[in-house]
Image (cartoon, rainbow, N blue to C red):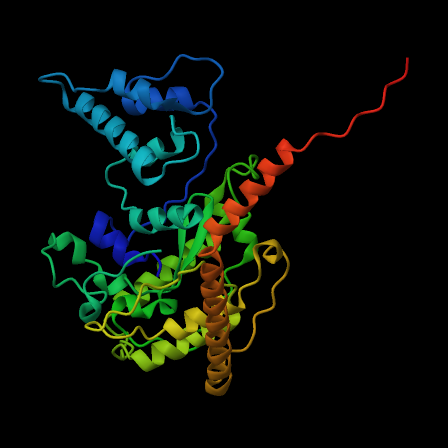
Length: 366
């Protein structure tokens, strides 16, 4: 499971369409720019471009009664800056709101793709549960939603780059089609997610400021994908419903190409009313093959999935080991039944040794 654009819409109702959130992070003259946007700026000399959350709360806690429209807009910008930087794009500082988020509210007419930016940022930080019961995976029939949450449902399954300033992550829902109640292809189409993209961040590339130029290829690609999906001439791809056998094949494939370390017990006991889970045997086979904790840092080559005969042999072997362990446990319990008699015998021996005269020690050196 993973977080997708569907989650962004249904939980946050953030827009997916729009300009990618990718602006310059140059901070020259940021205090003057901040005063133009919200009418105030921190006076602390040595500090990064932005403000402490406590400073924002102190100076913009409540908009004055009867304030002019310009002042109201300043307070609105400060409020959005606080919420966006602390809730959607919280970073490791936990106390500072970066100026780069405030500059996004310079004009109210900006149509930004906040949904893709939030998801790109989240992919850099952080499994997810599908909506609905197993019979309605990925659907929204179990609870009432604001219509805004479903407005861009046609974009939930698009494969596209997600852009948030320096961060570019790929949205690949075709790897988790079960979340949408659809057929899972095995293996899913391969996509190069560009390892070098994951090495980009504002700490390692402090000198990089012109992110729109750096990511122009991905910005153009994102816009083209949106246009193609919303073009009336585009022929929609036929969708196949979820198939449990196909999903089971996918899990076998995933176990053969992934490094999965599962701690016991990996799965809850099977509920007779709900029936057995399709992937219990796969989980157990990975559990039996998992390397010891001391070996997990070493390179582990994935094995091929078990054939039915191999799995039967391995299962029989594990059952025999379990029977031997049970016999050893019972034998140990039988021995413990004689424990009181042995303790009394040991106590008697120790008492006899204590009553026996001790050997005379030789004299030490004079």
